[in-house]
Image (cartoon, helix red, strand yellow):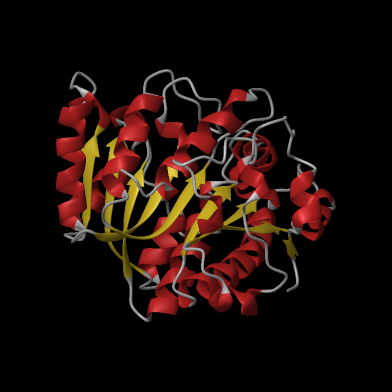
Length: 330
């Protein structure tokens, strides 16, 4: 497939640090060489990465999300293969090959008045690849897990899922922002708006929305649309994790307990991300939320906006999120 790199056992072995009397998770994950093989594989989950930050830059954000997937692999593939982890239930598919997209982006003039719009044209090309990969995974009956990359990729993920299921889908987004900005050109701040306007997105719940970083225009939009719903971070920041889960359950019920699952790392306090916040959910909160959410009918799991270029513990943090999500003993 053009613009997609499939991983093989040799690619995976480069990340694994062997140790005597231990078996690492990466030694048991499955690989494929083409999308047509998905239906023949018994694993229930398919992981791939989108190493890009073009959509973030197009939204005037801080670059760095392109490095995160590699750091996640370095951690995830070295966790233990034991009775609590099942690597045989995961396909490590590969990653979107963004080389040509970056070559095109580097040929642009950053001082041009149309610079961000031109980046948006490149984001649209990335959308097409993401849509095709997600569509193939969902059609095979498996659950995609996607590590970004910017939140612009939610559009291709939602479109691919919706197209595969032949219906618009509901989405739960744990995020400090709605990403419902005007659909003037594609970037990391308007993926859900494009998906909604094009009828790929039905009900949408944002959990952890920040008062300080949501415009009145956006509040007017989400208050007007009956299919939009949100829970403010400030309304839950003094609650216990258990009480926050009660509020999250209300959002899950609003989505009829069937949805795509988005986790924007901007929602996590102190995590290095494209829009890092000092005030947000804890990692403990997020892991508890994942345990709650995974019990529902989840179409996909998308983790985005984390920047591991300067903080290597982020790869380990996200590997916890992934292993929690695919673990079947909870």
